Length: 105
Image (cartoon, rainbow, N blue to C red):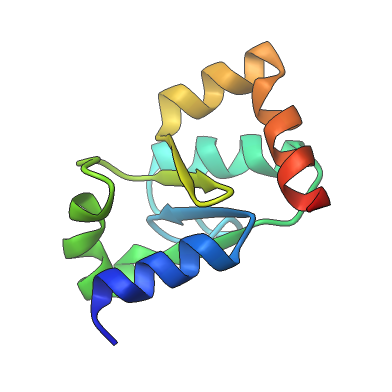
């Protein structure tokens, strides 16, 4: 399977997924840590991909949604953004509502 097809399958089969450096339990960068923490606070399960363990995804994910940085958060198959956008949405209560609706489907 082509790497972009693999990413598409992951994004479409998980209501909420984060592509990050490390894992939610052991993040490998501050941006990934903060983003995973805000997702955890929403109180719903989410999928993750440790891009450091998958060099093919690490190299090609920026091409998938034309977003150059990590982490990347997708909800309902749509790129939400990275750390700053996710944190800003959480502050406004928007992230929690989006995730609640995504996991209810």
